[in-house]
Length: 238
Image (tube, rainbow, N blue to C red):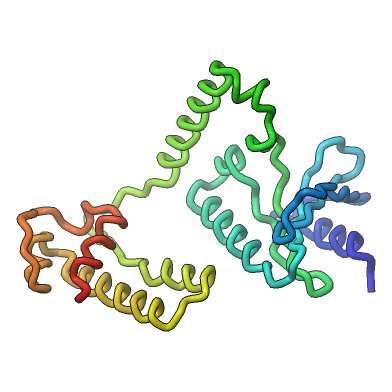
């Protein structure tokens, strides 16, 4: 069996975009020494290619193998962001290169983005400086606005809103173990949301009449947020 770092290097050197390999040997790894990390956190490895002084990859390995679902969730979210945003995503989030298993341990491999954790910045030198905090807030707001703009997809005239609540519910089940009563409540909520969407061509007032509810509204489901739809569904559930 190869040493674990050699296994990591094999995966890193196999990464490619189209016909071109992303990296060439030699490849080195440095483990982040963090003795204060929670036992449920990940072990972090920084990957260096050739003579580069900055890392090119980050490999995350959970301390506990059963926490691999956390890496799967992070990988899925990053893949979805890159799908929605496209090449511009490189400015905002790491690129998910691989989710694999080495020596019976799940491994997430993503691109490296330089920076410092805001939670570790000195309270006096950063958070105590109003100018720096204001600049951070403005930059965060701008980046969030850019992300919203890049991920918005206007509906065409021949399109209709689709209910993807089932997908979200399935993901929720992956993240949390539900008791029997909670499972029944979630199943009922899914059923109600799907029933609502079967009348999506009607106004909200007419839809709720089907469920014995009275409300004066000419809005359609397409005009409501996801939270508003869920709130209405909860009101309908007996």
